[in-house]
Image (cartoon, rainbow, N blue to C red; front, side, top):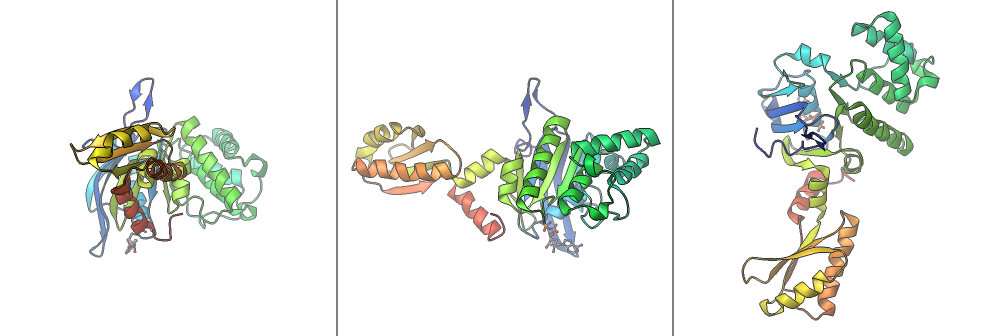
Length: 335
Ligand code: ADP
């Protein structure tokens, strides 16, 4: 695995960078000869949340199905907690998967449902009950433990599903579009729960979403897929920050370089100004902040140069190429 493949790891602790809990190398899958996943490689460290982001048909569900051993890849391999993908049963024992939203038995109670799964994983009747109550508390459903699932709201069912995914104390939890169909409050509560899972329980989480805002608010790392291809991957800050532009390139006449540097360095939000290419007149201006703030900063850079009467030959937002990929990739689907 090369260094780019490990871009989505790198959580540091006192002990330094943690070893990945999941490593995927060159996964490929086609349906009836049509590629759905072309070459997926990434790795994930414990306690980190990774998002698969992409519009419908990008290959997110196919990737999740492969990693949860429901589908076999045509090529490539992966390991979870050191177990090779050629041992699917052992992998299944170490992962948790959010069930499909229709897959809940309406006539069971929440606690009955969880106890059933805990028994399936070999807990004694008493321990299974105890574990189920503890998990219901983790997901904030203890007060409805004895209600029938048929009476649960969609958000409550999703939280029960997360509790079920945790029954076997998994190393990696897979959540495919977990907030689909929830109202904004339900969405926020579920995302907060997912964050807690990773932070307090140390589970690594893989989350699929077509919503950029969701990935941005909850994930540490992101893999952006488009038509089965990885178009970007790495930490959310790097990928999304870069996509939205955290700097600008300006070209000024050579004779105005020194003045331009001086004017721009005096701006409070400018981190630094770096001349690019010997004698080309290009300056790279790094600005503070991520998305919205950097747009304001870009305008202020322009304004400062104009006020100082420095001719601007070219002005480009950093990362605009990736931004184009984003727009192309997302069209209307990512907000
Ligand atoms: P996403 O989850 O990002 O919406 P999918 O992994 O579901 O994407 O789909 C990727 C591509 O594979 C799409 O073009 C989809 O139509 C196709 N596909 C998915 N599942 C099947 C299937 N069972 N049979 C044939 N084609 C499929």
